[in-house]
Length: 333
Image: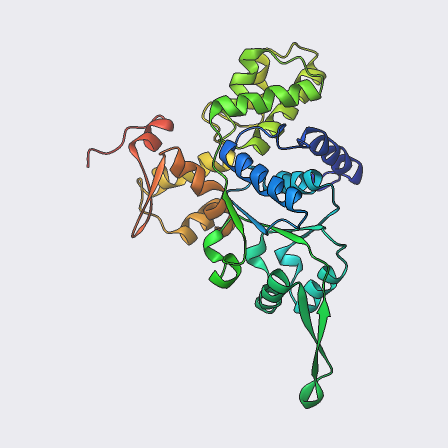
C-alpha cells in the first residue's frame, strides 16, 4: 500500500488477478440466478441457431451480483470480442459514436451503470440499437449537416443498479431484461466453496458456512471475505477452520450478521443520537461523515433488507431488531 492506504499498482494487479481467476467462464459455471441463466441460455441458443446477433440485454440489480460477469459470459458463449465502458465515461454523443464505430461485426458492447450516460448519448443510442447506424453532425451553426454512419451489428449488454432511472425509450429497446436477486445462503456457500477450491485454499465446511452467512447475499462480498480469511490464515499460519474465519472477520469488523463498521455506525447514530429516528438522509450522512449516495445505495438497502431500519415519510427509523442488534431495549412506544 502507499502512504494514503491505497493499493499500489502491484496490489491492484494482484486483486484483479484474483477477480479474474474466480469469475466463471460459462453459464454452466455461474452459480445462482437460475432463472436468469436459463433465460440467457435460451436467448443465446436461439440466436446461434438462426445465425443472427442476439437481442440487446439489460441486466438490472444491486451491485456485486454478477452483472459484469454475465456480460463476459455472453461474449464467451457467442465466441466474440467484448468491449467494456461505463455510463459516466460517455458524457457526449461523440464519445458514444467513437465506441460504436470501433465495434466489429457481432461484438458485445458492455455499458456499466448505463443509466448515468449523458442524455445526448442516450438519444444517439436509440437509433444505434434499432437500425445499427448513427447520425454524426459535421460542422457548426447553420452550415451543420447530418451524416449517417452505418454500424456493424452488435449486441449491447447494459447494466444498471437503478433501472427506474432509465428512460422508457431506452428501456424498451432491450429485447431481454434480467432482474438479478440477492443470493440465498446455500447459493453463497457454493460460491465460497468454488472460490476456495480455485485458490487451492483448504477451507473447512463450517468456515464456508460462516463466510456465506456474513456475505449480505452478495457473491462479490463473499469472495472478498474469503480472500481476507485466506490472508489471515497465511500470516498467522493457522488452519482455515471456523475459529480462524471468525477471528479474521472480527479483525475486519464484519459481525455475525454481515454488518461492517459503517453499517453499525449508521444504525448507532439512528438509535443513540436520534432516539431511533426518524432521521433525514442528509442529516444521517453528515452525522457519519459519508456521502448521501453511499448511505442510500450501499448501507440503507442492506439494513432495510435485514429488518434493522425502515423508511417513514419523515426519514429513517430503527426497528425493534435494530435496537436489539446493538444490545439496547427499544422504547415502549
